[in-house]
Length: 118
Figure 1 (cartoon, rainbow, N blue to C red):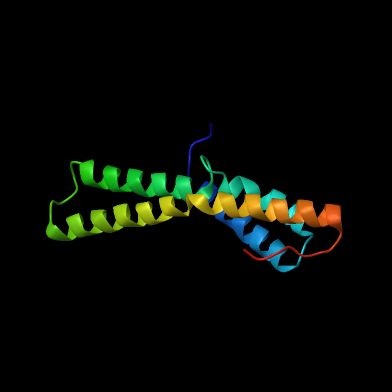
Figure 2: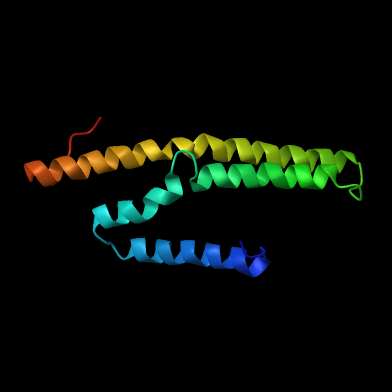
């Protein structure tokens, strides 16, 4: 694996930006779902990965010997960990994709073009 740099991370965020722009153009929903699916995977999707990244950042900062031990640091670490939990809570978005796939699968079969509300 090549070394991570700020540029490689920017490339990833630019890819997400391109995806957002593409989705704003109104593509076929089935294709849109296929493109978004890896981002919302229950185990490896963006919410889970971002939460893990935030926790790892908190740990790296907290455990670094050069980090000043202050109340402000404790607060910042707590904020990172809270944000991580909030991201983890979003892992259930994969269920939304499941429901959307079911909706488009059923409308393709029955041809009505809409589904019932829950």
